[in-house]
Picture (spheres, rainbow, N blue to C red):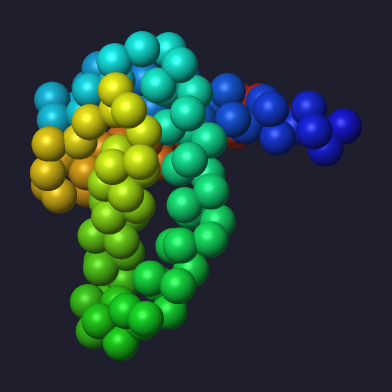
Length: 115
């Protein structure tokens, strides 16, 4: 059961990434396989690297009333793009905007799945 939920989350994230690439001009996914690998790597990056970034930038996050977390999310998307072939993010602004759109789409789709 846990494995099925993980696979469902991965596929939903992949679909959300593909939709985000259609909405945000600076994000390009070259193939369905690239979308799958980007979703998988993004999950790993968010699990292992994002907490370290968040902890190291905690004073800046507090000073910005949490708005710096948008930058961290964008950086996670840029890191993912640097690790996955055929997945490109043109810059930090596109990554930040893309991470916001991705979060909205992903939250909506997961809410539909689990309710």
